Image 1 (tube, helix red, strand yellow):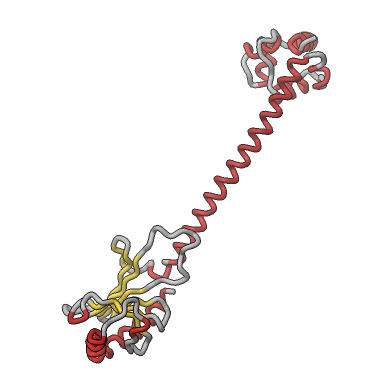
Image 2 (cartoon, one colour):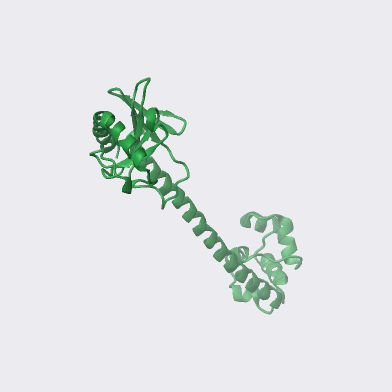
Length: 239
């Protein structure tokens, strides 16, 4: 006997109409009719509900209906396949979501020291004691390239501003970029004593240029030293 006949016979034995069964299983009456006439088959969930409603074991419902057994077997295999696929996709989504959540948290923490500064586009700005400080916000960091500490740029506020200072916490590598005068356009690296050493520069300079650099350093050293101390203190505040 096929499953359709078994379902119809048992429903009649219990005195139930197709509409009553459909209502209990949250399906249409036509669906019940299709099952009983073997036009379609119930899925595994509905089959379990029917076995409970009709007080029949699954073995009894499926007895001698090889087509239904094969369909259920196929449904179970496909269900397991889709379950694995869903699990893989869920893991991927969680990993991606977790990555960007952690990245955003780290970026928020990275810039937390300057969040009270004025922000203009991609730059955080602060003016204090005749010195202007800038921190550039970088958007293309990933989780593995976020630096440990912010780089701070500083300069005096004046019409004849001479140089910008770039400080990242390393007292042996303070970068100075001249914006006016004989050294205009030069970027040089110094330690905190601001003594020029040609060996430590990215570009090597001739003797004449070295003399010019030292001459200007003699004039600017006091201002550089004061700016360095103020910049170092501010850098420690924001990191």
